[in-house]
Image 1 (cartoon, rainbow, N blue to C red):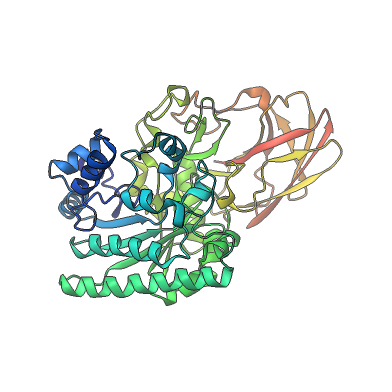
Image 2: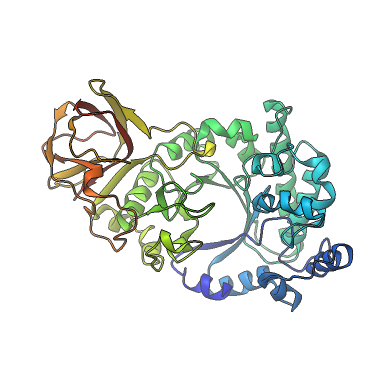
Length: 479
């Protein structure tokens, strides 16, 4: 299955594998082997269950070896992407403590040290449940696992994932100390990579960091891009967590790192999520369309990105809850096209602002916003300079309730727009009936070809008649 997942993504140049949560090695490990893990569970706690990946590893499987072999056969670059503080297992902690035994997802390092190193007391909170990087022992253990993985496989590079989980420090650690600890750790990793590549007779390994795209939230993480690049980072992967997003984050990062490092924009399967229907993972989500991939890539390149990356791409397929469907095969056909700038310039353009979800890693968001009657609001929308003549465009405002009975005025760069009937799928795509919204939740407006476009465009919206409107999504379609 892993080989097939690499083969079907053959349009990519590099494949980044995250082998588990970063606590239990999914490779051949002398530090904490899968045999050690299950022997500890069995002998100490009488926990006998072995899950699928565990069975694969116990039978001699090795995910990193498979990655390297499959990628080399396809002329792809194999990267290890390491989650520095993943908290997925934390959701099981409260029940595990009641029972007095860990689950198979919990490493011995975590179970033996959760009282000493955890950030806070809340047993159900990821922000509390992960480990505090102000402790040298926490950093050293992470380093040891990364070093072991890098020392034994012919990889092309390493990505340090600062978003899994994005909280790494407790409130008592000053921001200046967070910056120093993080930068020193990256510098230590860089030295290790250089030594390892030389020992294995390999070219210099690329060091990538996956960091929040929102620049204002990075200092609290201890992330200073300029300092990390000075410490040896070659690639910066800008992530909006769960979402494909359009903003100026690439331009901001380029101003910080210049030409010293390549900057990439991460895109995902979703542009917005709704309210969960039955617990975690059951949120409806608005699929990222082909045109949104293409337009987002063009925006990134226009701001100086070296390329784009993809995360959660398999989530177009069934996962977690049937009610999130209908599901589809991922759009693998977009992969080679995302690096074809001539093709991208020939496509229809799909710009959007989204409320995403309530996630601190997204930083300050434009949406959602409540439009009160008689109180105009101005929204900024970055767009690309016009390269060709275009037909009449379309602007859509989406609420989470009926707005079809409201009288709403919209000005685009001082030009008043005329309302048109609601459209739920303006650029035809295959994700019909996937939380596209109903016609009464939209207010749509024609955007004449004569209206000038700017790099930053102002959309002035005011409700003239009707109750207040909660705006959750806005898009502009140009064909």
